[in-house]
Length: 491
Image (cartoon, one colour):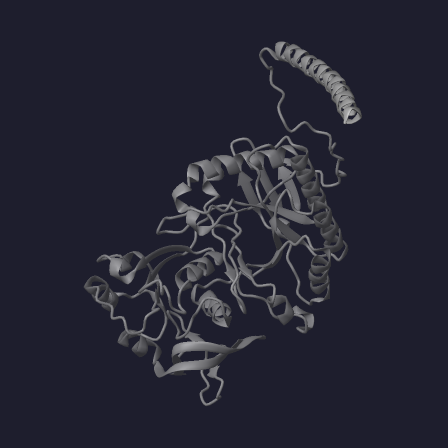
């Protein structure tokens, strides 16, 4: 498939402790589970804002194709087209007034996963659920070795009884209630609390994985992002060597260049990326950020990205993924990819520092994402933290990936990079780039010789005029001085 098939991907960061911007990496389309995702609202202005997009991206990390719509937009008969449905309730006291959905849901026989406090009588009966609603609470969430305390939760509900597999725990700080975070059985799943930006995001990932019947083990990758041609390329090369020397595979998310690609700065950029690639670094390209949605043009983006990828390929650099912000894909139904990662906060590394033999792994394909910094001391601290951590990172090149434009086919398999079927030479030494460069194009100028002659004549006349003026000034000064002396003698 061509570049038009691979640029529509999302970016998200699972913010376990603090809010972060977002990213997603991917390869090519593939067949997958198709889920209908229904939500009551976007939760704008509330603590639930961002839940809808966050859940869409979490599902994408499991390779799931998602059709998203609000309950109000649901049309009769649509439930029958799916065997897996997820319902998200961001507003507990907002009744579902869509009769088409209510009628169809009573007859629905597929799998259903509910998130939020407002649950149907049907789900309570199927799972033998008993819920206790306690309102606003400061809670503690834990699952496996991961935990977070003092989460401020509004309209909190606890699972007091449920049939099925229980996951994690969610308890008030007071400790008076003990409740599983979530529960799921063969056909149904339920999580009473979920908010983007805290531990509930990771805990939900565990419950959803089993409900979606995902059996593949999640892989965790290391990514450095925010890398531009004007970044400290010497420091980037130094970081690459340190990670390579420590045996840590990594990825760099680079910014594309769409013009002036023959400048020395671009040449140095390419040479540094070749050095990164030769030191076990994987190159991925991130689509540009735009300030206004009014200026978005997907066709233009595809053409520009394809052009930049061709430049990389022509220089022996094999990018294995493309990342793009969610606004580049406006369709209600998402695309699924063979490889999609859900990026997590760097703070997750600290959770692995004391886990013996790296026993615990994240449930989904994930990427620990760091911003590349030009501050040498800060970057060395990051690298040292990674070296000291127990966390094991996977090598993205060992998965099967294909990035294709009209001119090039770039792929990886078992750690081998190829461009158009030819193995990439990763042993090339970086070439020095001459800093002497004429950044302005010299154009043929009309009447240039005539203007030069005129300028010479004008300069000559000015110099002569100044000499004459100076001569007259000296003479006048002498005459005035004599006149002054003569007047003094006559007095």
